[in-house]
Amino acid sequence: MSTPRSVRSRWAGVSAEVRDRWLAVALTGAAFVPGLAVLGAQFGDLPRRSGDILAVLLVAGQTLPLAVRGRWPAAALAVTGICFAAHEVLAYPTTVGSLALYFALYSAGAHEERFRRVVAAVASAGYVVFAVLLVLRESPAGLRDYAVYYAVLAGCWLLGAMVRQRRHQETERRRLTAEAAVAGERARIARELHDVVTHHVTAMVVQADAARYLAPERVPEALTAITGSGRDALTELRFLLGVLEATGARTPGLAALRDLVDRPGRVVELVEEGERPELPPETELTAYRIVQEALTNAAKYAAGAPAAVRVSYGPDFLEIEVTTEGTATEPGALGSGGRGLRGLSDRVQALGGRFAAGPSTDGFRVSAMIPAGSAA
Image (cartoon, rainbow, N blue to C red; front, top):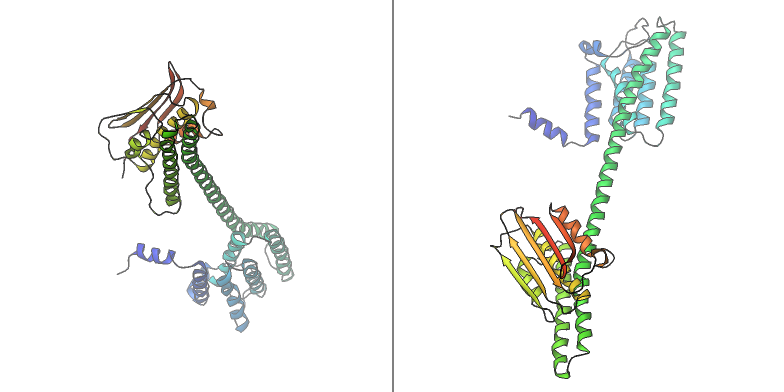
């Protein structure tokens, strides 16, 4: 047995065009049920005459256009309005089908886009003609009655216009949200490309510069290191492309820190405190990028200087500290185009953590505290 909720769910899945057709058919059928006539709309208070075939056609002309009220709202309103006016001026018996005029006005306000001002003006002019015809038929309705009924009809239109405006606002909100998501994704990709390319290219440049001053027998070792940096860059770019293509390729995380600090040409001490928990991928990637960027800056501004990386795993937070001995450099001068440490600061803050970078007593220090979060 179908429950009211299941019926509503199935009805919600029906297209608007199909629902409009059902409304038109239902209202047409109800219009010929005598007991429902008291629910109909009538205006003019003219003495009613008996119905005939023309009355049937005018009733159908009011209700059936509702089948296209969403696709052609102006046309539906025009046909419905003309048939309603003719029905009232000719003083045919009131039917519930006359309510179609209210539906048509609402639909015109809600769905008419290009010519809504023209439609409103023509509808108002049509109402004036309707009023004049009623006066010529010696309707007892007074000026106040005409004004009140016009306000009722205008209210139906305005209700639809409010729905249309709200629909446009929601569309605009979704568009802005989508644009913000695209901009955020572009910024994320830019940060990833900066972190990958800058780090490895810097390492290759430093290693190539150093190779010029090496003894001939050590040049092959330097070239091997440069080749390794190039391969690492290609590997991480493949990781990044895998993420962009949603192939599920893994991005570097905390497990790759040892490989990061042990690369040739570096004097880096890695200390890990506590047991490494399972962390969300974004947290692991951010932690890896912090260490990577700090070591890249060390290679740029303090080439060959010792560095120390300390990673502390706690129940609630992950703490990272990278210290480099040598000449201290202001944070604003680090990174390329302001994307380096500044981009990392944005990442950490987005995860709810804290980030700091600046000169220390004997060099430069980068630190971050990131919530451990949940890997689920």
